[in-house]
Length: 151
Image (cartoon, rainbow, N blue to C red; front, top):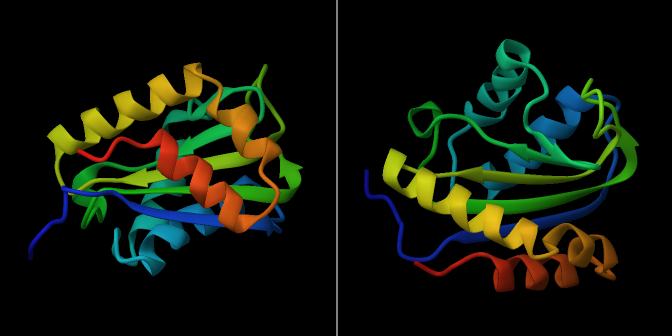
């Protein structure tokens, strides 16, 4: 299996409905499956991360970083944004409810660390606010493409 690490696969979904955090996380990760960045088991692996470790993926007010380990289904570097129609609670004491989910996957640990570092830089530079201000799905994808490094 060949992995594509040269250019991240970007996806965006808007006004997504989810009954709870599990459904929200699965839907965010399913977008990565749809673009070929992750295999079909990846969404459930992302849910298991939170079930096992708690809501640490809720990094800041209203934003969760949905992911699992590369060996749990990462086929390529993929980053997606999912904006929910209605926020859901993950159980985080300070940063609930979540309305934005950034999902990512990578095929190997080195790409995983690099992608995570790039997202962290973008988030500290106001990415969440720019995503919330996006007018539609195409605008969401454009904002995310600008924020994710092409390496």
